[in-house]
Image (cartoon, rainbow, N blue to C red; front, side, top):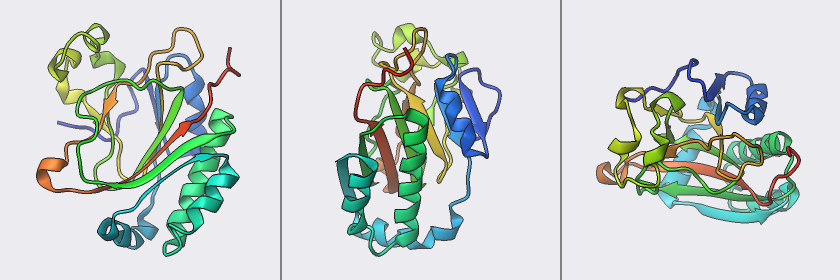
Length: 213
């Protein structure tokens, strides 16, 4: 069983205001989820699910904006939301350069629960199943690198959580520059076998964050 809404896990903050994303900098938190409604432009996404978009770019917010205009020319609401999301991530991370991926996905991508080797990552699944993540209370961290099976890592699979479509999640990676921080354990949803598709936005910081040291 997978949950999509729980406010009581020690490593997570979930709320309906973008301000809660700033809580990612708290030592005990490694995932913050901004719950929001993207229903107003869901119909416009059908075009990208049919044509299969894959856009990736590294640079400043302004450079990404210029590069993204043409690929999203037929869907202004999505373009505006991606840029607003990137600008929000810039405020939270205080980074100046980013790696952005917007792509239609029909594979399982990361099959195992894992942590990322980065500072901060933003994830938003505009369409389809969202990212799965683990509450700290059910993670066996000793097994993350030593066991090849998710069953070793998860102590209670009933409490596995999933980010709902349209919601924005920011997660910590293993090189987040604050001592005592634990990276978020997560994985991609299983969709390949069922023929499902996702429209995924992924944004990483493109520099080592040191302003927190």
